[in-house]
Amino acid sequence: MTFDPLPIEAVYGLFALAAAVICGAGTMMAGLADRLADRTGLGEAVAGAMLLGVSTSLSGTVTSVTAALDGAASLAVANAVGGIGVQTVFLVLADLTYRRINLEHAAADANHLLQAALLLLLLSLPLVAYLTPAITVWAVHPVSLALPVIYVFGMRASVDARHRPMWRPERTADTHPDEPAEAETGWSGSMPLLLKFCALAAVLSAAGWLIAVTGQRIAASSGLSQSLVGAALTATATSLPELVTTLAAVRRGALQLAVGGIIGGNTFDVLFLSLSDAAYREGSIYHAMAGADALLFVSVMTITAILLMGLVLRERKGIGFEGVTIIAVYLGSMALQAVVG
Image (cartoon, rainbow, N blue to C red; front, top):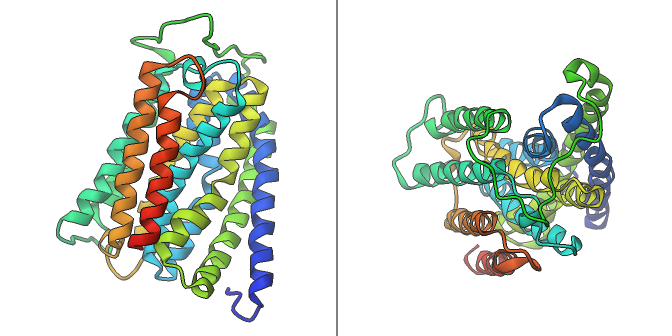
């Protein structure tokens, strides 16, 4: 389905409507995820990565896959990778709203470090595919097959680290521990909450599809490159659930959920590339990438490395060096996209 017959003003209106739906559904999901973290025993950090991070990324998944099916390789890739960058900036914005202490200090958890390291590993593989000769199996690159396997291994390691931690961050007076507000009932006792959560996730998916088709029309009418539109426009719009749920989690005091949702969502976003590669039928999507897309990978890996350093150093006051640097690198990368793209 396309919106070519509609005037461009109506397309912008639909784009804004989809973004508003994403905001509303995302707000409700934060509360459900917090309760599910307690009831299932996953804890906020793991639930943030596995439940909140994955579900809030569904709109972005639909956007990238829809773009790939239409042959818009750069839009699909830039939406996935650009979303990781803007979502990390959202974490800095959430830090600004938490006035008491630096968010990375208060929400210290070994799982955040593990997820950030996993994200760097996953981001490096598509770059390897881009820089090496094209090899495909049924038009799918082997890297696209490896990414989900590595992701599952990382999630399994996160659960193990939650239940059998080998080390813990030092507790300080400003550390905000994960203290369950509800009794653990297991997955069976959490089924009503989980069904509501899944229903909201379905709404996010539908809104993501609308973002995809309207985003492509906006790109065509504006004359902007697919890389720039994907990195700056569709990535930001489909990342709104992360912003909304992160701010809502911080307001609830679920700090590990907020940080875990962003980093876990970023990790899951790399899997957009596997799905997009399968949907892109003209060969490997990594070799259909533009140079601007590869530059975006490098920028996002830099941002993630800075975040990882912040998680390790745990500055107490303000947004810390990592917050200021992340915003500077992100803004610089968007300026480069405008020039290179």
